[in-house]
Image (cartoon, rainbow, N blue to C red; front, side):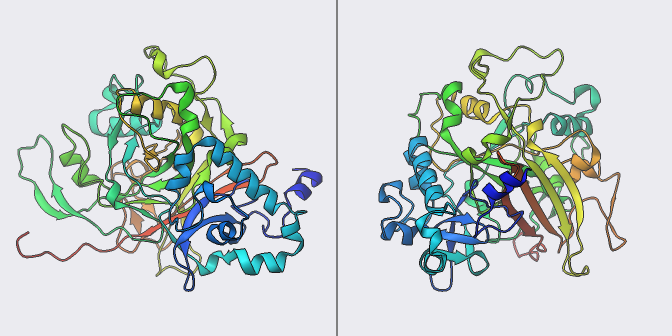
Length: 438
């Protein structure tokens, strides 16, 4: 990055290497000891109070970010023109040479909250949650473990973005709830041995991105064409779709995941606008050799099937380790995903499904070709056969009680600045005690 570019990026509110420069401006929901829950915008180590800005006429009330708004669904429903207008207005307001920044102390006292003083809440009300299966390497790894290398990819995987419907009621923002080790059935498929009801012995993380749908919902029965699909996506979050692998392996046949996946899904609390990731857009990866041609409704000559170069990582730490000690388990990249967000939307709505503002469309586990880019412990430990050494001398095949999982993600902006997502964090709680009647 040149000195000139660095000067352009300099901002009195944004420390060097911050996740939240002026070119990011993610939306979220927060509260403090003295402020009720409301919508905010992250800038550096501060949060813009959208309620206060709207009250004083600095944000247009029609943008549905102020007033009594506690989540961003109202803003999402307005669509891309309103998103762009609000984003441009905030960038003008926060420009280093703007009137507001010339009297920074006054602006700070009226409209800024220290992020360290805020409690983050769910940024959106998620009406529906769909989890896709978009990573070629993840699909190959899991297929090899469960079906063998010859049947790793089932014949539909290269033809459509495979997905299942998740449980919206247990999607939480990082910090709102921790994963409690779930009870469920565990058994050995095709063994003839009866299953047992027990706490999961194979609790896992899944490293994902999640896209937040916006704009007016499409009418039931009306699909969203591929060339319009990306304009209906407001932004993205980190997703940790916690999984009980032993329960999942027993229950998923023939209809797919259920209790092994519905006990908790954690998202990062800041929704990074897709507009902030424009400089990180990239071509999709090559198609699988020998795969059927992509059907017309999922392919387009106008180049709307774009990937996104977002680096993601997963670290593990514990309270009983020395302060600051963590082990990096996964480092991956969303640019490897086989299917694009536009294809997610187009396929999801192809049969007439109505998508609504605030719907969450997750990518599924993001894995790459190397060991350290595998996006779950199932893959890292190869279904428990290759334990992972820990800093304290122990090993892990799956998560232990007390393990704290920290996910981070970021891309590069037009000037090389970091466009970050913040963190997505959860600490494994022990299973509930056995209750009478279980």
